[in-house]
Length: 120
Length: 120
DNA sequence: ACCGTAGTACGAGAGCTGTCAAACTACGAG
DNA sequence: CTCGTAGTTTGACAGCTCTCGTACTACGGT
Image (cartoon, rainbow over the protein chains, first blue to last red):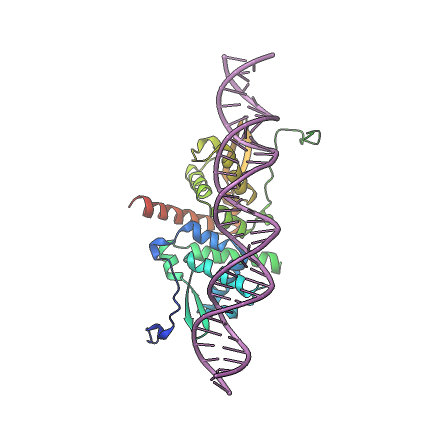
C-alpha cells in the first residue's frame, strides 16, 4: 500500500507466473500436498501477508522453502521480500478471476475435512 | 501366483474407499493429472457410466488402467464390470456430500481453461 | 470349442517429489 | 564491524508416478 515501490534495493527477485500462465493442473497439484494445503489454509485465515517464519511446520527450513516455491510457481501465492522476511499472500483475485469458486470450495473442503477428522 | 484364494464368489470385485476414507488431498492429486482430468471431464459431460474403451486416450491400455485405478482409489469414480466392459461413473453425490461445490468448480475451471487455451 | 475384444498384472525405466543436512547469502540491530 | 535471524542453495536419497511392452485372464459370440 505505502509507496516505496522501488523494491528498495532488495535485488532479490522472485518469478511469478502471469495470469495466463497459471494452469489448473498445477494449482491442483500444488494444493494436493498436506503441508501446502495447510499453508494455504492459514494464509486464507490470515487475510493478510505472512512471513514464512510465521508457520510452524514440522519440516526443516529447506523443505519449507521448497513448498513455498511450489505454491508460488503454480500461481497460488505471491511472495516478496520485506527486510529479512519473505512475505507470502494468496493470489485470491487472480485465482478467482481464472477459476471462479475454486479456491473457496477447496478451502471449504479443507475446513470440513479438518473438522471431520480432528474435532469429531 | 496360485490364484487358489477367495475370488469372492461372484464376478470380479473392485475396491472403493468408503465416504469417510476419501481424502481431499487424494482427490486433488487424482485431478491434477491432465489425462485424468480429461477422463473426469468427459465422465461429467456424459452424465452416465462409460466404458473405459469409450475414451480415446493417447496412451496404452495399461496406462489407462492405471489412471482409472487412481481415480477409483481416490474416491472420484465408481467402477463395476458389465460383461467384458468395465463401466465408470463419477461419484458425484458422494463428493458433493463430502466437499460441496468442489467438483463443480473444478469442472468449471477445466472447461474455462480448455476454452481459454483451445478456443483462442 | 475357438477366437476376438476388454481389460489386468508384471516388470521396468525415466523423471519427478518430499525430505534432510550442511554450507551459504542477505539484512537489521547493537 | 559483528552477530544473530531469516531464508537459499546444493547435493543427496528414498519413494512415488507415468509410461511402456509383453504376457495374461475374463467374457461373449459364432
